[in-house]
Length: 343
Image 1 (cartoon, one colour):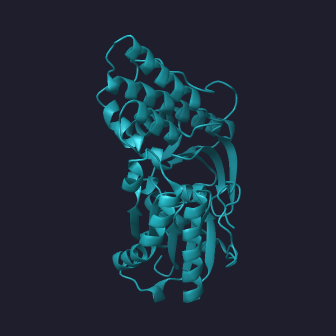
Image 2 (tube, one colour):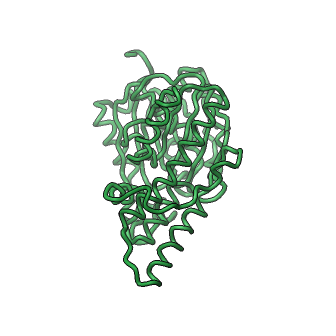
Image 3 (cartoon, one colour):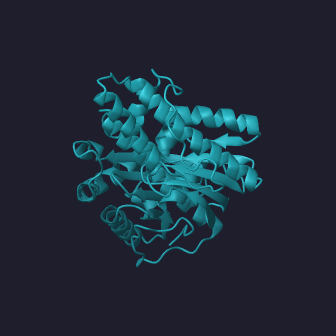
């Protein structure tokens, strides 16, 4: 739609300063400045380091996005920003910047939910979302199953992790295997040379009758397995451990997701979040969805990790739906529940 409003999205929930610009469901720019290298030596994200990196990156990243889109500030019709959940200090940087841009440009502001934005972004690649759909969101901080009647206005939680998120488990297992941070891409790469059936690691909460997840026990089981082999003087075949761990995670994720589809009679499954870039998760989900008669939607990897395009996409949906803009007094809420799509 050439007459759709142009929305600029700001994402600063963790360690990426993401700026995206969309017109309707057309992606015009998606610029990301990551502070990942600054956190790698600590083996995880340091909140204060992330916040300072956002402060330094905000203005140049916005300018880079405008240049990529071939637009000026005067072309922006609305600002959308991640208001939560996420790291409190990091969120504050993005929310403060969004308020300043909205006020300075005289355009409406939309504070949106980070998790709902991970759902909305798929529309930039595959078009409008089916209503309803089931969404499986898997990242370093979240493992959630959602029923999505309307991503701009209503998202219903079906299940979530009770301990470690899937991405967090990837990072911790990577550490015990001596692989770099972040762990997800490195485990995925190592697993391609190993067998997912080599080691029978546990599947937490696989048949407990809920749609919740648990990966803490799996993480511990991997660590104990490695400790036992090392104590016995045996060598560790990293690819087999990586592949077997990865298989346990994606087995649970895909089983639970399809359970949700069956329970709520939904025939469309969307997978989003950073772990959705995992090659084995994509392959197994496709295989199982085809067998179950469920249509699968997964954004390209660059739209799975945190980015401004997803925030802009959700903001664009809210503009189109006539959602009331946010107040310039909106807070940054580090524990914003998924059921609160708009603040």
